[in-house]
Length: 416
Image (cartoon, rainbow, N blue to C red; front, side):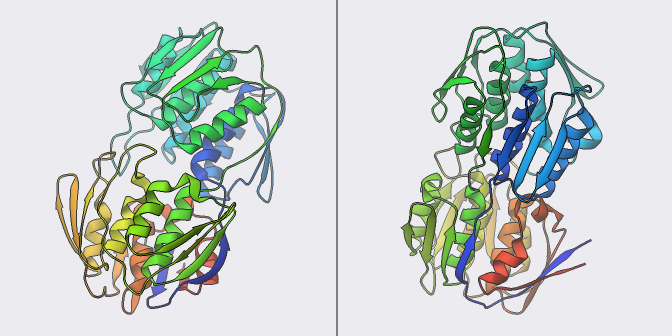
């Protein structure tokens, strides 16, 4: 199993390009199931999660063509509307095939995703929404089995804000009879990107980006070309990496407009940030100030950036209070940061992080994707060498991580 070896102490500087967003690309690729015509997507990152989803789509009968960051999908020959446990267990986002399959074929069998390291992610809102649209949904033998002659437009109020639930139901509603209204919808930029893709394919959607989305069903969708938005979490991660090392970096192919809450906290920490039309530049002080934060659904501070900020607070001046309100098990990286010398105390969903003068290199273990990123950030400023084990998590969500860090001056290499 691969490991990452980091020699701390290098100041990050220079320029790198940000990749397409994993969390936008996954639902957008599933949208190809809604039409018999080929759909082309650009700026698709090369990540393990993307490769897994493409294999799943191929199993269903989708023709997949990939060249560099361009993926073309032809779902005209789909003959197997089933997502098996073997595929879904490795990537929870596979549940996003449920809505498109039911909408176009009137039936789908999709494995329940199973457990997740960072906490419960129930799919009950997906099921509730499809039932409101007239589907007969049963959960049996570990699978969600949905059948319906034709989905009908409905008013759907989700009991909680769910990004994948909003995306699944929005895709399903595109081919339903009549109007569907999704209330308490997720407002994330990735939801807006999916809506833009669907509209390019002929869907009639309004309100994406707000908490009420309206979809007028159409008879069929058609071919289109869509560029996947830049990855705001990758952007935030590299900004944190530069900040913690007192660095000066420019990130291209991205936008600060998706990251208001993160940018505000980095400026509170003492960083200078310049937002350009399609780039972000950060200059950091020699030592950051501690910043407290509370995670919440977009547009508030993203849970996917909480671990990275815990790492920079570990060496910042002062004490920070971090409250995690989204996932109940999302402090597992704290124990690994403590191995590097961080002063962190956990009380339920709250972490108290007292900045120390320096961290010390050690061997640590990644527990999930964003935890892995926090350990890299800590390793960049730890004295000596830090070895991060189980980095397969990183390959799920960060494209060309080592080469991008190296381009900024980090001393990092992969050990097989």
